[in-house]
Length: 421
Image (tube, rainbow, N blue to C red; front, side, top):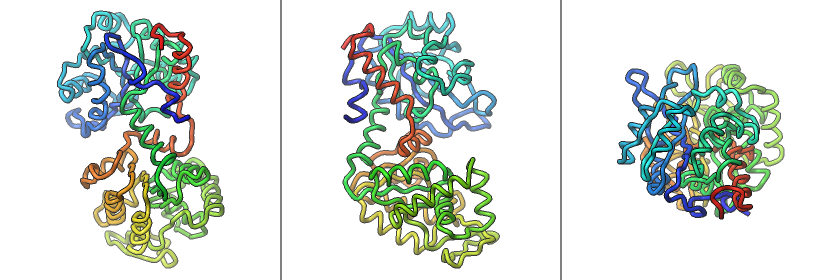
């Protein structure tokens, strides 16, 4: 049984005329000078679900950053932006579970959209993260709001790896339903790794080496991928695990970024020992000497210089592998693409992914932003909104929101909710 068969979607339940919580992840980068949003792609991703619920009363729950951060803010600006791109009024109330929020929900008309205050203004949302569905279902947030609504729809795939009250606490209170974005995300990853046409290639780059090692091990062990391409810090770590002295400056960066570098190196070595050439490593690299790009063979690199990009021979090798793939999943750049001198590997690899005739999926974060800036976002099948969530999913880790959706469907099918199947 597929994941989508185990959860409720908007195809399974009639929510017309109902009051529905829609949990979004519209947490967006903020311009520190004027408080405007630098990127509203997550807002746009929510449109299909919100438009489909035009016959319902929609109560939006969302968060922005966390207390103590510079971009922690109310949801007032989110309401304004969401209303503009939805082309419908979105009312904001600076309350989450109090009497004003309750009154606004009770007096809503069909077709109206209301966004409540930042969920992380509520202490239990932050303090009780990681707790069980049962415990989070007993929080004030869940108890107070569940009495006022008929169903809960989640489109917050990018937060699906988190266990917080606003994300999983409603599972035993009202029917939990996967929104269109959430459904698309699950379908995309399932198509790529579970049902993807062979050969399946997974491209792993960026600086989150610990997460990517977990992904590499999982997709190769389970047969989800035929080969893994490495770039960025991920490639540096696998090179070190293979016995290459990557130099103190590169090793120091890895040690700063991961919690247990020795354990991670051991894990990477185990993957290399087990899967051999199925893990593709650079054969040459670009290093930075002052402001100059120096290309060196891996066997002849300067251990005192940082490795910031793939070399030409590696790019050619990687492009050949991509040309032969029918399914490609990519998460993370191949080097420090922010510096033009070291953007070559990332741009060439991403451009080739954009030419693949089969199914292509790009991860969130920098990967998605870069794809849009290069104009290849329209050439791939799916760009995920999830960064950490996508990595967790690909690595076979626990996804609390998916588990909550599965539990809620079982309860719904047993007829235990006010809305019956």
